[in-house]
Amino acid sequence: MNDWRYVLARNRPTLIAFASFVAMFAVYAANHPAGFTANVVQTAANKGVLLALVAMAQTFAVITAGIDLSVGAVFVLSNCIASAIVVGTASSAALGVAGVLVAGLACGALNGLIVIVGRLQPIVTTIATGAIFSGLALIVRPTPGGDVYGPLADALTGRAFGVAPASLVALAALVFIVWVPYARSPIGRAAYAVGSSEAAAYMSGAPVARAKFVAYLLSGLLASIGGLFLTFVTYSGEASAATAGSYTLYSIAAVVLGGVSLYGGSGSAIGAIFGALMFRTIGDLLFVFNLDPLWQPLFQGLVLLAAVSLGAARLFQVRNRLELFP
Image (cartoon, rainbow, N blue to C red; front, side):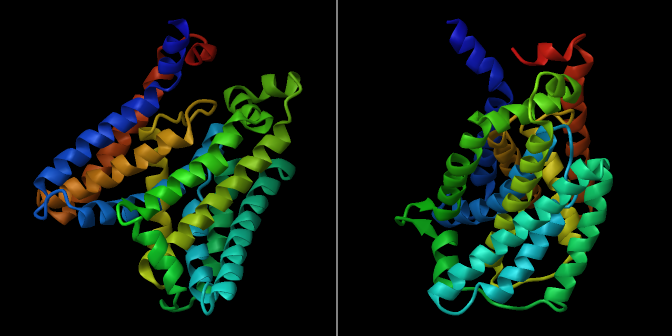
């Protein structure tokens, strides 16, 4: 019984995010002009997965009590690179995909090295590197355009086995391949310890520097996968500063809605994924209820403010932060 209580307490934010998303999507589907159809689900899934991947990227940094304000720029840079090199034959497209992922890892490694070796605050570091990545995106793709290997794009944005959205299947695969091993590994546990108390983690012998570096490395990798998927959806690349800024802001909203503490040391990428899907559904609900587009940013900003406030309220109620970990 105590084990069940522990599991439920530990995963309460994720379960709340999941339940909220299901309820909101049910309302959205019930009020959509086309109803609850495969096409509606597939379109919503493809849009939601884009933000979910960037939210996963943000989660790695936030868990260490940091933040990565360059995830949107890496996302856009990867989109531009993919639109230029993930083309041609199947073999050349595969090499292009590898090149995009290497670029994402390089961006994450740069962030990690500056934070660790340069001892700069993550928020300052990632603002600066985000500007650099945005500039590189403009060099790669001065004007919108490009292409992508069609069969791969169609396979990942269509339906797996003609039933489930392939994008959701790919997202689930990433969770099991990347997040689950990371969260259960010594380096993942060290990242949680660093986020809870870096000084205590250091004194207990945890690999603080390595935990931070891996967190930013994986943040860059997941953001690049998101940019790659954006190319599969749009069949083009665009160095859009507005897109980079929006996805960075929305990724923070998603991790908070998913129960990841901005103070570090608590939460999971799975919760962030449901937070991202929930945030996307909020936008879809505004559409189906015909809310004036001029009011939509205000409403989304209020949702973000409420989410951050609720996330911080738990810390104000405890005298010892260790009480956050049942």
